[in-house]
Image (tube, rainbow, N blue to C red; front, side):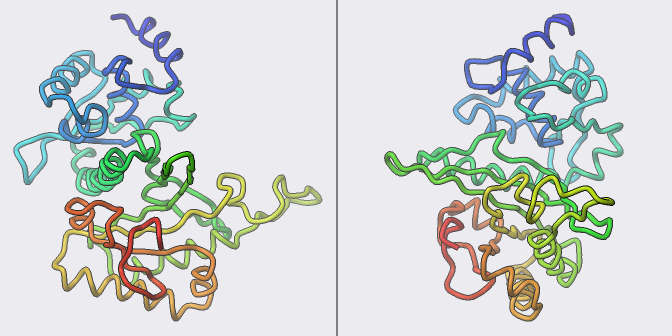
Length: 302
């Protein structure tokens, strides 16, 4: 199929569904999620389909030069990612909501990003599987990785992901949003906890007008993107249960002791959970530790 024909088809397909070309969904998923294994793409796009189906599509896309792969160091499998040509093909996909795709320039560059990126995808798949089981709404395009916001003084906060999730209870629909921070225990516990200060700064940050110009949006800057400030969810993994428990305790200490974070926590729900608990029991189980006080609970009840 020619590139011109592919782009024409992509422009007409704003919301990929099982009835639409799987190759388009795969390219859009890799453009949005940066990287994924064959099995992760199957769970994301065809949870009732076969791994062989995804493998055939991926191998055809690799033959076109639009995707490539890098081996995983601890498993006999690969992670797939967009090439520069693939990124150009997907640049105008409506499913990406105007977010530019980010190609990975080489296998060496891909290998550096693989552990964290695939762990973020694992986290997304927990919410997606839970939503399917419960009849809620959360699909491949309801999880946006690496979302950046200014927090003033020339600094930016980059969330690992923004989660959009709709709880469906009969005729009632409740839309929830969350900033998700995935911690693989590769940074110090104190540095992880300081992320809470950055989120508190985002909550209160108001852009300053230049010269005599008035702010385009009165009030905090986050109101440009969210009707309600998203809750903050920390997902921890890659360490012993004792060490992960200590890191959650450090997050709770920061919430209690830092005045800006303490004030922030009176308005915004904050919680932390272990990734393996999400995979075993689902995010809707009582596995989330509130960072203020209280017993573990579902993330929707923080």
